[in-house]
Image (cartoon, rainbow, N blue to C red; front, side, top):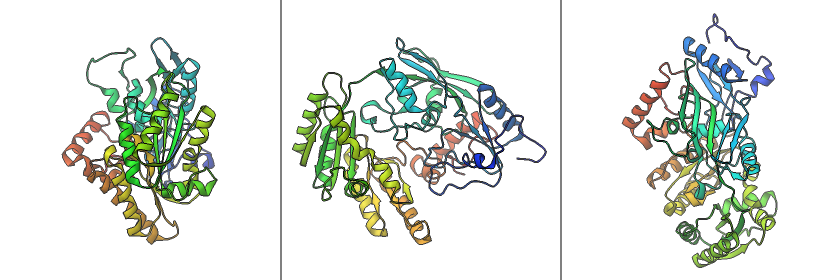
Length: 451
């Protein structure tokens, strides 16, 4: 930021408060020495910042709750962090049209609660839903535990209000149930990680509320049997609403936190749920039979919602259990469901080759795993081996016909591998699209489109 130019809007001046906006939750994130923070209070604040930044060619980092795991919301040297948490109004929940209109700063859980109060359901359910924001979910096309049945954020975004560099406000999409006028610019902005514009309003699709879910927990003596079970579940006429997998290392991590009843000698645990109205009890009995036929060693079925929550408690404890173990690279790769166990085997081989602990767990129902690669932060060699392992797991996912990210996005952490998945010519086309919306390259420079 040049010394003869200052932001024409109030910035955060307290250094301690300012520091909290410098980094996100990505491994190795560090604060720059010089940056400004604007906490937007309304649409006009966003317009003013982007008008000024475009004129002065100042980098802008659009930011929500800073829960990104890939570095997409870390402050940039001599840039401006534009935080939109303050745009947190839920202005509409419409049961007839089955939609909600919300600000980007609305906490995901708050939207889910508001929909539930109207007898409706907002399905996307990231693990961070208690504190992540809708704007961030849209920016990364977030998913979560229930994607196998309900899909990801993109499946629930009908329309957006976006501010472009220079301050122009545009609207994309529609509030009607159908609409095919023009190109799908809404879909273009979903998952763009703040590189095209700043989202200031989101119109989401809602669906009828499901029944309280019931849970099945199954343990397996081999990954192959678990893989057979996952494939069989995916072929069911009535899909489960959740299919989660924990490998042996994940089970050990959870059990080290507290006793969640997992046997320490199993190779994999599958957690499966149904929330189909009027049929949850029938479904979980059917899933239990499928799991047993695939080779499950033990199967437990919940009879009511309280038991269902108890069976799922170990999965919900996984994140704090892994955080307690120390520094880690948290992967996010997705492969075809039929090749999921091959990915897990690859991760285990990588761990053995580099002398590292790698936990392989995640959303088995859609082939999206989140391998955790642990390292000693005080040991440069350990960190280097972990980074190499990170690379090898990405490579394995691509070799298996998968993608380098299923729901966390690219940010800075995965930008070096984007061309490997897309190809250079496709990457250049995407850079050209970015240049159309952001000709001076001020929005999140250096993120996603590595250069």
